[in-house]
Image (cartoon, rainbow, N blue to C red):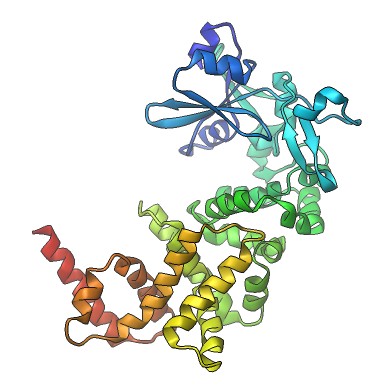
Length: 383
C-alpha cells in the first residue's frame, strides 16, 4: 500500500480484512483497493501477475502470501452497453455478470460490494476507516445487509447468497430481513453459478471453523437444496441422517480450531458418508460386491453433482478410496493390519471409521483394536 501511495496512487486496505480487525478477529487474508489500473500495478511490482476474466485483479506475492489488489470499480451500467463495453462489461442470462472491468472511484467501488460490512476501507494516508455504505453501524448491530436491491445484487452474482449464510454463521450475525427474504425467493439462481467457483465456495463454507452454524443458515434459507439437491432431500427424510451431518460438522469445527488441516477429500467423505453408504447398500442388493458398491456410490453421486459443484476427479477418487477402505477394518488377522496401517490412505479412512463407529455405537472392539495399532505405529515412528 505504501509503494502505491508513494507512486501517487490511492491505496486502501479493503473489505473483509478491515471488518475482521474491527471485530478483533484475525483476518485470513488482506485485500487492497487502489485507483491504479491492473497494468500500472503490474509495472510497479515485479512479483505481480494479473488474473481473472470477469474482473481483472493483480495478485502480488508478499512475504509468502498473495495480496489481492483490485482497481476501484464503477457502477453496473443501467442501460444497454455501447460497443466499448464488450470487453469491459457484459451480462449473461438472467442478469448474471460475466465481465466487469469498468473502473471508478472509491465510493463507487464501495457501493459495488456485496454487503455493507465488506465495504469498509482503511486509509494509510491518515489512518482512518472510510465507510460509504453504513458498514460500521451494521457491525455494531451484528447485521448482514446487502448494498442496494437484494434481488438485483443476487441476480448479478448468485454466490452472494451463500456468502451471506457463511458470514452470518461465522460472525454470529443475523441476515437483514429483505436480504433473507430475497435469498429464500431467489435460491434457485444458485444453479447458474459457475460449478468451479461453487467448489471453492463450498470449501469456504465448511472449512471456516463455524461449519455447524453455517449449515444451519443454509437450511434456514433453503440454499442446501440447489447446492446438494439429492443429498439434501435424503437427509430431510430422516432425523438420524441429519444428526450425522451435524455431528460431522461439529467435529470439523473442533479440528479446525485445534489447527488440524482437513483436506477436501476427507470433508466430502465425512459430509456425504452416510448417503454414500445408503447408496452402496442399494447397489449391493442389485448384486454388486461391497467394495465395488461403495466406490460406485461415491462416483455416481459426486460426478452427478459436478453440474453444480465441480468436484475434481482426484478428490472423487480419494473419497472412493476412503469409503472402499472401510471394509479393510474388518480384517484383523495376519499381515493385513500392518499393510493397511502403512498404506497411504489409512489415516483418512481411520478418521471416518472412528467417527462412524462412535456415531452409531458400533464396532467398538474393532475401533479399540485399530486405535491401539495406530497409537503403536505413531510411537514407533517417534523413535
